[in-house]
Image (cartoon, rainbow, N blue to C red; front, side):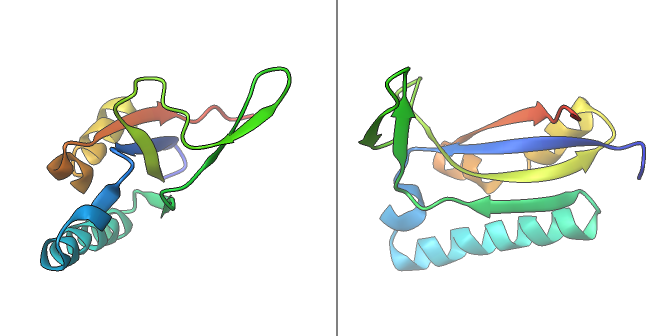
Length: 117
């Protein structure tokens, strides 16, 4: 595994997340997240990962002004969480990311290789 690289899977959603789903659907959808998380652990990909609360503060510009809300450059999706994984290359990391349950709620993911500093 020493030859594996680190990749971040950034998970994007509408900002409302699963909270808007009826309880039965929410429970079923969260079960898919727990199963995917376990699969990543069992296959040796997962280093860490967390979901974010659906609230944020944005600090912007030279004046470092602060406002409540999300930084949403595309006005469609906000970052809802992340996974830090290890994979042989970008192709493998993308293949892993395609298993993310966010796609069921029309979400998106961005896969980025971590630069070792």
